[in-house]
Image 1: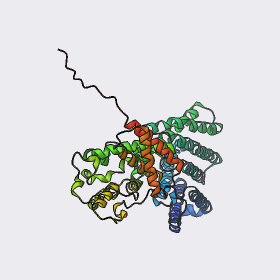
Image 2 (image 1 turned 90 degrees about the horizontal axis):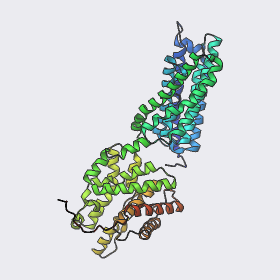
Image 3 (image 1 turned 30 degrees about the vertical axis):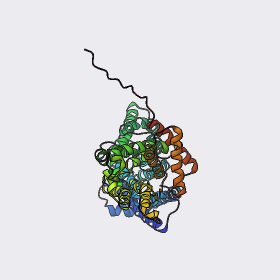
Image 4 (image 1 turned 90 degrees about the vertical axis):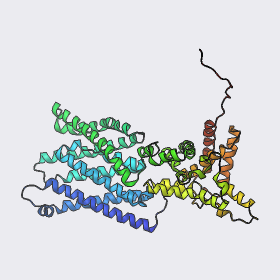
Length: 492
């Protein structure tokens, strides 16, 4: 969701969250420096007092870096600053990445640390541009950590070696992270993400060899050692990414490409229930998902997110599936009800769907789609029925959905696709011309009723959506050749 302006409450909350996160980051870095350098009979207090200037410098630099990160989001992606969960994710990624790198660097090798881990995680949880900036900040934090853990180096040779290690780590983090970020956007399965580790070997090994060989020499042992540790860097990065991404998905209800595909599989709990208890609604959702995915791709929106949202847009019908036409056979239950009661049942499926989604701890975006995909449109069938039973003068708002109207382009697409799929079923002639006229009239009606005022959708995008839905629907409901009436018996 695009946010163009922050209110005072959002600014105060985001600043407070960044201050707390920065304090935690500074304490963690200082603690790592102390743990790495305190030896023998020197107490922690004595060490901090004797190196107070260096430790203070570390804290100041970290404050500057997180301030830069805050201003980046303030100008480039304000949405992150409106969600404490997203800010928490940023700092938690830094904490986990630093901790993993510190432990593996201390007990294995600084070259074998999972330096691309933060980049791999951030590109799945944030926009690509955001993840590039976060990876850069993490690379700078790592070089600070590496340089200041050499405060008590015993010799000039050790200090030089540590310096080259820190430079190598910085370039591996930056270059490997950038490569990982651009590769990850093309990954569509968890298994395919494992292959990223193989591609990451190229920049990581090049950086390791170019920066270490002039210092360590070109001996076979050193060469193999750097190649092995560079390979471990990539392996650890991908393994930890695969292990911890589902944890972040669950903790923060993140909609990664992997999570979206899991939520739309036949094994997903609500989808399975929809398939068995409301098969007509399930089939409707499948077709709508196909339409919405194609439309989102054509206008440059997220097709995977749009497809998943379409699968869940009508789950509220699970409460009374038999009250909806697509799940009925020959008998219409509304024949026994007043128009007012029928309207209450029909329009309640929007709020019932949002409630069901929240009960199952699914993303709020799906709940928003449930209540927005009918906007404030009137339920015309029962409004007309009520008019016939009265003397007129009925308030149409009493026979309309409560809203709100769509606030995202995906919600607007689902609104159009949902109505188009349902209406096209009643057409006796499903030629492209008839379907095009139907879809055009549905879009124009929603424009006249101000249903698209809050979703920033353009007329060009509506034209693209119309043509895409027409092409898709004429493909789904294409005409078939009439089969001849002939009974073929088995040869004796």
